[in-house]
Length: 111
Length: 113
Image (cartoon, rainbow over all chains, first blue to last red; front, side):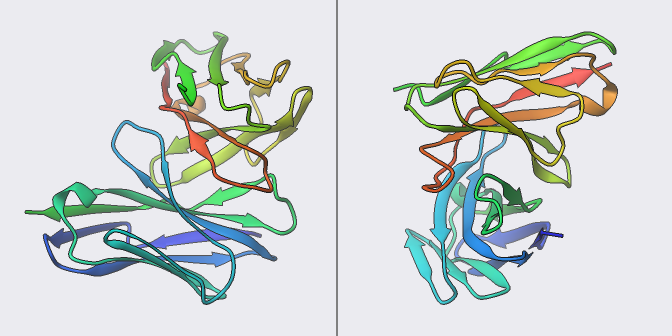
């Protein structure tokens, strides 16, 4: 059964304190892995897509990496405006039409 | 360009009532989908469509119906609401399921009493 697990569930950081969020997946074949940001009361907003092990993508203070079993979202010197829930999702080779989401990591960055 | 719009934003139903959640997109996207989001469970796919006239089931389709008569609209129908359907519902669209960049709507918070 295809599964996506995110850890930790919640993370509190001081402004400037770098850390990483984890997304581990068990799927029959990975087509793509996606990272989203979700602010309270809003829909998820697309951040990155990764397609193959070893691939990396960066955007401002965020960097996403992918291995054959997991993905990391590295946050360098975070600011309070980075506070949000971060979701990962996978698309499998078996069915391009379905996306499986993890339950998310709620990040709180204190000034 | 409004993107993906959803109405209503909030809704309270009584058990057994029916209603339709509306979703529209103005980006000419082929792929549209409905998710529900519950605490601790992440987003779960209810139904999806790869084009007008074509729909299929996701992970949790029971209790929901969909249709896609136009490219722009993808309504979600609850025929007989149950408390277990209390959730936040998101509609999402993409150019296609192959070229994936899901754009999400703002969500509908539904409470069934």
